[in-house]
Length: 148
Image 1: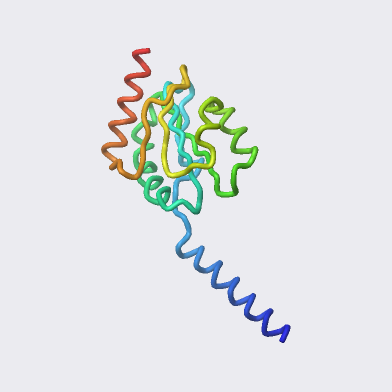
Image 2: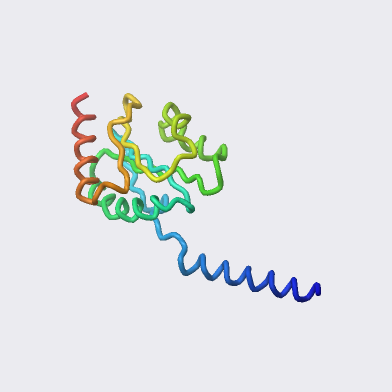
């Protein structure tokens, strides 16, 4: 009986790993996010592996990010896959998002465009935004931050 349980456990484990490998998340990673030295806008993506909206938002955003490589925008990913760990809060603080983090921690599936100088949220990006709309919103946020 014990061998049968071990065999079933092993089979379930192999199927689970295989399913994750096949259907696993193909989203932007921290390495994909451009980093400006003196950002005027921080584009903070609140994400997790289990978030279905993130699986739509992040690939769109990933195609938009290179368009802003020479602009003063910093793309940051706050990943809640493993929960609301202290490391995520620490990263938010380091990235200049300490004031807004408590209001949004644990929520996922969106990107906040934050004025780096004031810490104010200028706009947000969701799965309702096309790539073109994302580009326009980011460009508009940069222009608004430059006027301040």
